[in-house]
Amino acid sequence: MPTHVPQAFFIDRQRCINCGSTNFSELSNGRYTDEPLHGFLAADPWGEDPLPHLQSATWSLAKCSDCAQIFHRRILNEEWNERRFSRWMSADAIVEFERRLGPAFPRTFSSATAHVEHILRIEAVTRSIRGQEAVRLLDFGCGFGSFIEACTHFGFEAIGVDRSVGRRSKAAVDIKSSLDDVAGKFHAITLFEVMEHLDSPNSVLANLAELAAPGAILVLETPDCAGLTDILTARDHRLADPLEHINCFTHTTLKSIAERNGFRPIQRPPVFVMADLGRAAKRMAKHAMKRDGKSTQLYFRKD
Image (tube, rainbow, N blue to C red; front, side):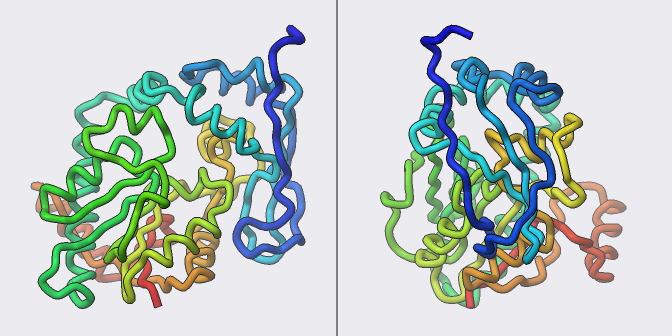
């Protein structure tokens, strides 16, 4: 290893990222140079390759004994996290990563359908707090801003925030870089596939709660990490990449972290954006029987 290659600096999280407890145990650990993690990272698209900067780095996956939250204890410090956002996760690398998820049309169509379903739900469940006003929505961690763009077509006043320079540079709409650029109260706040990336998810939710109008809706969506204990398979890596997915939520822990910040869970109203009546009927029957299972796509209302 060349001596001139600077090594990434990590910090240890000393408390549970959900309940704040110091009572947690290690599920698994390793080095970034160990397989299979090294191979998973090498296969991912990058702008600047992070691997030369991770030769001495270790990871530690822990589970809280009090609230069952799973999280990575060792995370990049502020300086190196900024390098990750600005240099490792380049715009071209992000586009390539999403391209690898599958053929563009079905993926884009499915994403747009999900956007419309959320928009229709949010419009319905915010009527009681906004009257005839347009829905004022904040999408935190909005990526390229596709959900914000869709919201504007429905008359929402939608604002997006994303830290990633790469994503903001490729966005079709104006995106703010931080909550410092956001003012006013919102009828709805959304975080799609964001909570798993945050250094301090509790602090972020506390700040967002300050921006939520009384009775506002919070939508959280994360990968479901139920049963996760180690990083041995490609699926494990997708759920618990120690550079990216540093928090690993389940239905129970996602609900509990929202409740700690003043949001109570609510039932999602049924919405079906599809041309297949058979599929719509099945989804309606499932909703009527309240067979939503233990989803990690949850709706909340601010107390």
